[in-house]
Image (cartoon, rainbow, N blue to C red):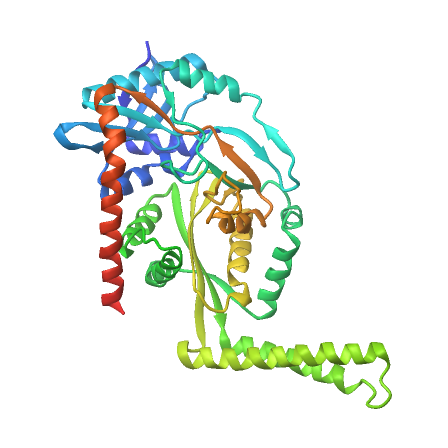
Length: 437
């Protein structure tokens, strides 16, 4: 007889972390505790056990309270279970729904990161041979599929890029686009640096996040949100949040440019003064143009040094590690000196970091399925694509409807309410940023 029970937190987290297929930071103890503090959701750490009290499956189930004492439940990235075991999935669903009903739930939502199809860096598509079976399993369990969304309409992204870190670093780099390799090389040539930050650097990270979000005309979270996330994930032995800071040391960069300028002057000096051949004239014109460009660059950096000082953080990324996977959860970038390509170098350095730590899957956490030129997020997609990961499409969101009438009300009215709240929060955060300037 299988039954659902509350699982002791350490036992729960160890099961999730070590699950061979479904380990995910969104099912972790850390995410549950974070959601309680910053998302106003009540976490339940539930497990399906047999008569010997052996754990067969678990789920972090987040309860969101609604008006009139209703609620809904959300298992981010789905149950931690072997989805190929149909009867086990059905039993787990039945027990979770019974639990949700006891809490006056309207519905239970899951969005398992089960792969529908993947496309590698060469454009070769590999459908998941088990996809139809998995889809049917969830449908027969009573879940209603929420559609094949193409953007960020769902709780979690339905598309992402993943890099298999079981490959050698050389293989991983070979999958980078040509421009990505060139930009990483240029960034290194300019003596940019990527360092691991501490909690004292959250303020700088937040500043860059606000710059990025302002450019995209949205503001998501305040500084305390990121501070709390960082502290909780680093306060649990099973999880880790790491800040990567991409920096330009302007004095060093100017010296590197001055060295380039000297090299160009030396090349010009050895060209014959009189009777230049056609090829020599072309070479002189090219070198002269390079010289002028470098001189302009030096002047620009010297101006930035006066304005910002000798050291400037241009990129700040937060990486979440859990189990054998890592996710690029947040990335903020300055709106100046983009030609240093520090953002590319920062990505490269935390790919290497994850590889060296024995991480197996590096997830860039979200992209789009609508690849039309009019999509404003196409640039984000193309940037992530350049690092050569597999383009992954997940199975999507599923709702188990417990109360059909209230579900109809909730799904029609809540989106309007959320839009009002987002607009209000955006105004409040902008005011907070303006006041801090």
